[in-house]
Length: 296
Length: 152
Image (cartoon, rainbow over all chains, first blue to last red; front, side, top):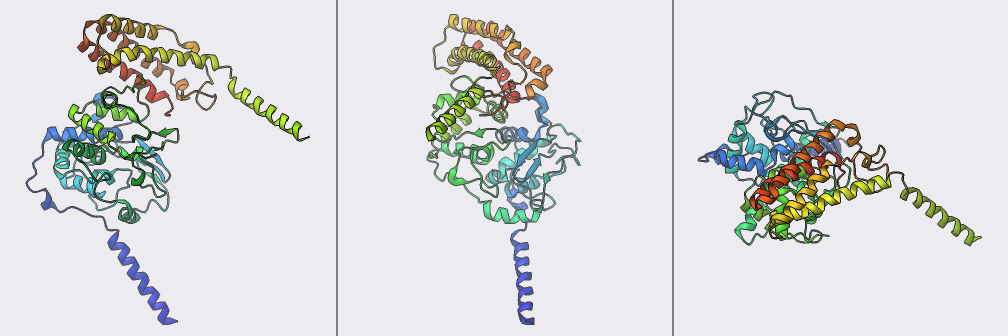
């Protein structure tokens, strides 16, 4: 009996140790950034294509005010409500004291400068595919934006989802590096894939999630319930979306659907970003969407 | 006996449908949808030209833009009665927030009128002028849809 108990205790301790090791937040080594020179223009383009302002600008901010990354927008989910934090360059309220490496760790590993896991409401599951050069440039660009001292709102997430360390287990299961669509036959498709799967994080809304809140890549872009509880986010694979290339391009640049209705909901924020992107990039996104495997 | 029950059930089903179908706001909802459709039709002409799907024609563009501007000048007060929001009646996607934010709704329709007026001036002046004005119209449509229309 005593022996069994000892064995159990040892087993438990080993289990806990393994959990502690595998759930440890990952970071990138600083040497990976050697030789990367930030480019502000590129950083601005990443900022637009990544849709940073869509979540981190104050709710209802317009035009210039969208560059004040005060945070505060709430994201309801099955696990509670997440609030986008202040990521303006304010040294204490925002992320003004972050190094480029801190941003790399946040975007590619979902790890904070203090070494904690971020909740995947911050879409690092897709940002992880962002190139280091793009992140270093984005970091430099973010530093040029206005600083605001509005304190970040704590997330409203209950037990057990509020145990940050357990996100290490979630990441182990669902933070898979690499692309959803494996083949990209042309440079245009490759660029489109990068814009959609790495920066644009389109799949975060357009793909259904499993019980643990992870995107189901087998149903990639097949549409999903709207997390706000009202309506659905449409299927944008060729199974349902029959818009032409011209229709898609025009929608991205103007917000008009083929029957001249306008985008609604969060998509209006997305259009605000898309309409500022280069025609070549919009064409690449269009090509990627038209080439998606049909999913009913 | 079974027949009677069936009749009663069918009758009840019909009555229930009738209750849903006939709301006092049906006319107003149909009117505002028709108004939106007229926006859409005229925008279709302007947008089709901007998009390159139809050939630019200054007269046709001007006519569509004038229609659009005229539509923004019509009073829509009677189209939006209290209690005709999504959830309260069938076939409405208007969010209840619309009725709680009249000053903002007014400001947004003012922006729509300004964008349509700019389009009216621009539409006959060449394809580039039309293209320059259509973004403002789209933005004004979208601003209201974003705030006050339930997503599909």
